[in-house]
Image (tube, rainbow, N blue to C red):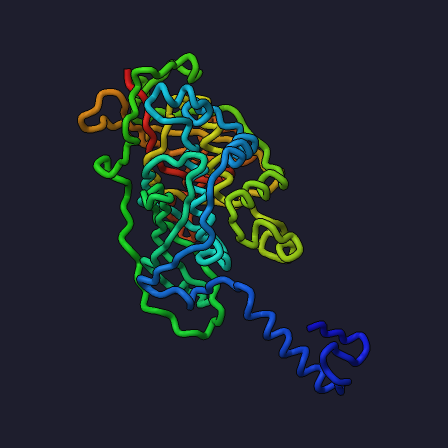
Length: 390
């Protein structure tokens, strides 16, 4: 049915008076609006609510190629089928954070379409490797809710699980987001903040079945430095840097089917808090992981996300540097072929990391010293990797 109001007529309707026309237009708008997804607001989240996210995603070799083009990944196990086979993989698996983004992207329309900020991560475990041809789908459970003091927003905690076509877990993680309220005057739910693990324990690491270091070639991996060569407390400046491009971050975010409005709509964001689109925080995670190759080239597998915080927003034109610190060094029970390193990787914008920018002392309004992030820091990410041993 075509409705046209430039004259006073409507296909399928008799000539209408102006009052009837206005009423009909209102009705048409209502009928149109119920077909769209406005996203969930803080009031829509209740404790233990389970969400089945659309849309299942079959990952292709084209996705892997585009991801490589966006970040320049060089880790050999994810770059070469032949190298991966020498380690016991059937072929090159997806880079772990590509799998993360595919799982994460599914949650955005339901969890964070109306979010102001993605606040943090905890308790993340990577499961079975993802390969081209696998299909990933995601479900989430609300594990906590807390209205913020301004009564305009609230924090929502979710646990999201991604599985493949065989219902094998590929990623299980927790995150929390600040979400807008639909109505400032609405009744706040009872606050419930979940207990979050400080780190993923070594007993919970999932090591890919059948992998070995027997055929591992450090020359092809580009670095002789193995697990034995790293020390707790050691800091590594990754030296290299990448400048963020508008087209790159939007392409990456679309690749993951992440629909968050703040990354795409310059028309609305020009009047927003920052006056421009902000870059998806996961784009910075992948960029930092790629930069970490220079210094951590043999960290071939991420097994855990212990915690993480997007400290400040990033924008097109910013240049990202990164450095890492070895937080812990762990032997794997019953294995002498691989060890685990717990790392803190810090990404900074428009500042080289040879002096390892992180936290500085600053006086609060009462004159007391407190630790705050250096103004250049945009990401503080705590994760655990596997690395071959000698």
